Image (cartoon, rainbow, N blue to C red; front, side):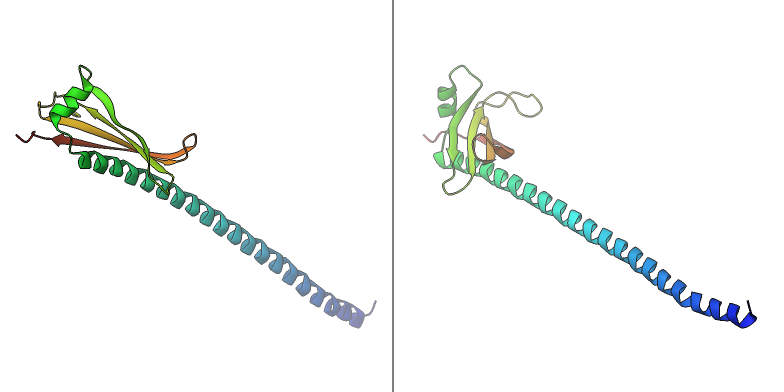
Length: 156
């Protein structure tokens, strides 16, 4: 083999090496871009799930607040609550009530027993516990409880 043949052979090998590197770099870039797209899709999917959960929880809380508002609109006095309960300390005042046109419903219970610290409530005060739900009856997706301490005096 002549020296010129070796030089010619080395010149013809170099361009093919460069083309091979371009293919390897392109494949690595394709993998990086694909992984980024998958991670972006996964992040978006999780954010959508979280937003849906927050929305359902918010609807359940609004349902519970509707129960409190319903109770307040009834203008129930402490004597009415005590008569309704008899010798029980807790009872359901408003049965499960569906909010028309929505998947929301609530129930309201009333108690004459104790505050959060276990202290007995005064005679003219009672605790209202409203539980709001979001979903259909067998498949409740969210639940929220709102408590209110209400003090009333019967007008004479």
